Length: 148
Image (cartoon, rainbow, N blue to C red):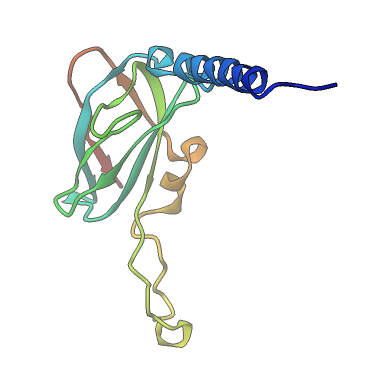
């Protein structure tokens, strides 16, 4: 069976066109698949003082896309779900907060016996044990947490 070069290139061109259409259609999902979010900002404090470092995570009641943000030295945070600073999914969330000492470069023998990595009670590290919840509503949301 003899196949001409022009027939071969036509087949490649057709395959490329189909592949391009699939990519443009967004096989893995696209921006229109995103659920609505709203801006979420706030301050996290522990025992009345701003928490100086850490991460805050909002786990939505419905949906798999979490919102998360870094806690700044003044205790403030801003959540991101899809794009920087866009917030969190609308609805109810369980919240986890993680804040640990910078233990980089500290050898185990140099660490003090009572020095634990976590700056806050470890119950706050998991959404199921933190006891923290929040509801994200349309518009801007200021949600503060004062941990004890």
